Image (tube, rainbow, N blue to C red):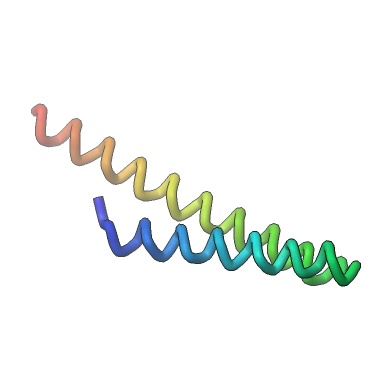
Length: 62
């Protein structure tokens, strides 16, 4: 598990939530969409780390 990668993903998720919220307040659909994309990217990064953790767990058991 890469703690650094998980931290980056969490930061990206927070950045996306803030951008989406700003877009909601200002009514800017581009900011809303960009914020949603950053959140999706963060989820992909977290999933990648989960897969790596699971693979390491399987290898360690073998």
